[in-house]
Image (cartoon, rainbow, N blue to C red; front, side):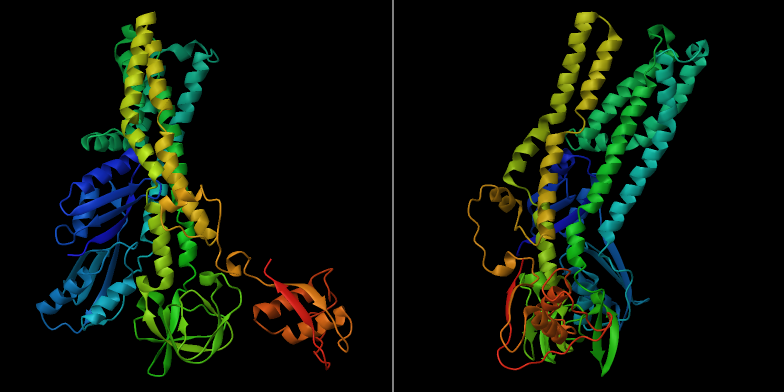
Length: 579
């Protein structure tokens, strides 16, 4: 059976070792040929044999490790079923789609419940599969394109709530503790009850704000490795446990370090909150690409125009697009003529003439006339969807340099723990004092927590691919991005790749009987003032530009009627460029 590729959006990863744990676990499944998890984009790309392992097992394996998969649920009614076999037919039809985790059809209630990955399949694809099986989709539940964004938003809210909770307890604890250490408080600050107050303030931070680190550390160790959470949990727990011991057994010493454990957890939680917010923005380039497709489409049914959600456009539907509207899906024109701005796809600013038999691409802009076309590619099949998938896969792929970072990250935490233990032993052997030795052990553990190498490499790849997409440059994968750093020659296929995609007037030459340049530009702008063509807009822009040739031109509605172009004989010479 032909191999398939799954792109799993994962939540809950805290460092590169989490990604490594997911890779190892998925790779052990029978039927998985390769698995690559990217911490920065929080995606896992899995190549597998669907005859030996299915998508639901991949999702279950990830979830069994304690991570989440940003899947979406779609529920909608279906008509036309006559028996339980009809329900089974629909389930099989939906189940064949890549990205569908599970599909359940209830014959009695005539409703379909599908769980799917919005990174791989759209609600429109699911509806089309039901229609293809010979049944009718009556309606649909919530579209799932933003399921991953919602999952990220939940994570951001959770991290923010825990950070605020930690600050509420940590700030007074830190102020009181430091004030006592610097002698800014009275003798009362050294009473036994004050240490119990510190305990009461530190404990909620340790086991609520910091609980994620204990869970993450346990999952990591259970998977056979150690991640950043292990360092945080160990560093804060050592300080907290020692302070509790001093509180219960005063003969061990008189100083507690509750503020140390609380500050460690709260500051790192601040970093996690900022990290979650940053990850929530990493899909900006993809969302901008997705925004090129309109949310609805005008479908002509039985001679009537019906506005339907984009996800409900089916192959074979007759779609109508008016001037100024974006074309919703790919298809072939059956009637009408117009000029379509395809610069989002080709980079060329000049609209392309379309007539009967011409192909149109979703996301492009209809310029002048009304077009009726037959939808041929919808949902994930459109050219725009393929571009979006390319960017997603490129962001989730691994560059060769990341293999080095992953190997370093795999031994990073054990190495840090070893260094911390050696530091403690050396200081204790040199001084014989437990407390200073413990403080230095905690310092080594905590300072090493960010694991910069494991974080920076995937984040740089994600940022580079995303930045390129915003500028109109698409990378096939991260390997291509890495190799681009050694390029010394770039060959471009057309001028639209280099220009801004917007023509402008750079020179005007007037010949008799047209008069001088001001008059010529004014006349030309009057003729073009109502045009949507890029060349016409360039002429009008030059005429209305302060200080430009023909700057006295006033279009209609701006203080007077626009002049009407006239004259005979030789015409203007307009040299245009795309600056």
